[in-house]
Amino acid sequence: MAFIDTGGSKSNSFQEGSKLYIFLLTLVATLGGLLFGYDTAVVNGAEKSLVEFYIYKVSGNSYIFDTSTIFSLISQYRLLMVIVLSLVFLIISGQMIRLFGKKKGSIVGLVLLAGLAVWAVGFLSSSLPSIDDVEQMKNTADAVKGFVIASALIGCIIGGATAGFISKSFGRKNGLFISAIAFFVSAVGAWKPEAFNFFGTLDVYSFVIYRIIGGIGVGIASMISPMYIAEIAPAKVRGKLVSFNQFAIIFGMLVIYFVNLIISRQGDEQWLITNGWRYMFLSGAIPAAVFLILLLFVPETPRYLAMKGQDDKALKVLEKIAGKGQAKNILADIKGTLHEANAPWLSYGFGVIIVGILLSVFQQAVGINVVLYYAGNIFRDMGASTDSSLLQTIVVGLVNLSFTVVAILTVDKFGRKPLMIIGSVGMAISMIALGFTFYSGNVGIAALIFMLFYTAAFAMSWGPVCWVLLAEIFPNSIRGALSIAVAAQWIANWIVSFTFPMMNDNVWLNELFNHGFSYWIYGIMSILSAIFMWKFVPETKGRTLESIEELWKKK
Image (cartoon, rainbow, N blue to C red; front, side, top):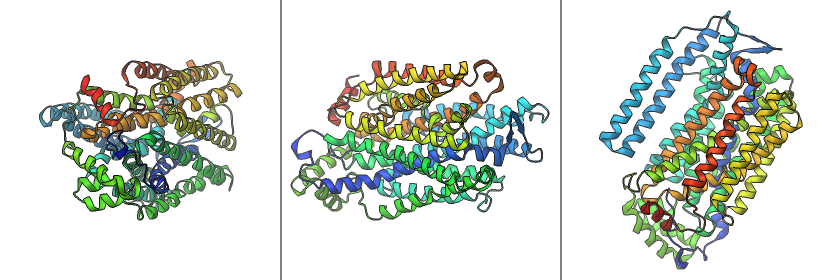
């Protein structure tokens, strides 16, 4: 990721610029974050309805399958799973070529694709479950459920992995424009997937495809929104302004929680299953349209303009955000770093790449998106009704938003590492305790408290601060390598979200652990994340970007 601040000198402090202008540009860019949160969390309110509308109905402790469609559902699921994983593996192979070079990277990519091919043959040729074997049919249906609910994350992987190319080839502003279009198309398509089914699939998989399109928008925005902010941000408030993007993500989640609740109260349970969930997805078209319109009025970033040789335009933007007295000096600093833009990704060794990837993986492996995507499901496991579960989800969203503000106010004061380690310890305690409440059957107020404590611990640490670290640790000369970390984050997000229903609803695991198993896994991951932060991640608080680069050069 690139930044227009290149040091701590007075010439780069942006003291003469318009704070209001910088704030307004940041506000528009954070709409990408808001739509990120809105689009990924909308499924939380619609999850139960989608399952009953498309996959199976629940009657007490029994599961009712539509025998005329269930086998088509499973067969197309297997085929689509192979197709989307092939896309993911192709993207990973392309990243390996950029990382290791054409020769070595191609070998690694071919090995990955060969492994995928072997798995795909076995997966596609395996026998279908018997309709009489309820347990096997239920477990298979839960795999389909995980695929449908987490489908947007496939698009996030694609969007996140290609965001570096998009931002470099088309610009930061146009990259955000592409993401806004994807959000809008997804919202309308997911509203009526049968009316816009141009794919020759079952309607549920038309829905999946539109969710993947929305996910592409999320993946692009997840990288380019903070990139845009960072490239117009003064160094002394860079942590705060980049953290505002995370605030916008959480705010977007909170907004859709309220929207879902309002929609759910417009009809009864059956109306929610047949029509209510549609309006939840369609509602995303409104903020997407606002984002599209506002992007028409913001400039491209000075760094991208300078990279394309448009120095006059870059200077005009810099004069607004940094003041006329400093604009020329900052432009000179920018142009002085452009010759490094295409350096090999391993210019600083494997250290920065591995740290970036593991930061991303741990941010998801601690289980946060299980809480954000499946909160309603979790609260129903606790015995709450659909309406009550949506209200409790709003409480989770409010806690998430409040403690994200704590991170914004403290990230430049206390430092990145202390917040991250404290957050990890808090999440570990919460998840392990939550698992025990389910295991013991005492899922009352204590379970809710543990979930809220977990959410608070994540929101003040790994939520916003992880993005700040990712924005800082990658040197300007290999900023494209950030796309590896972003892709890894979405892959980890997808794996966690896809596997949660398989663990949480598995008959055998529930007989042994009573829904507690998955939370213990996330607790263990939280412990490992604390150790990783303590041992391997440098503190970046107060350092210039050049001094951070020097840390990697010394390793």
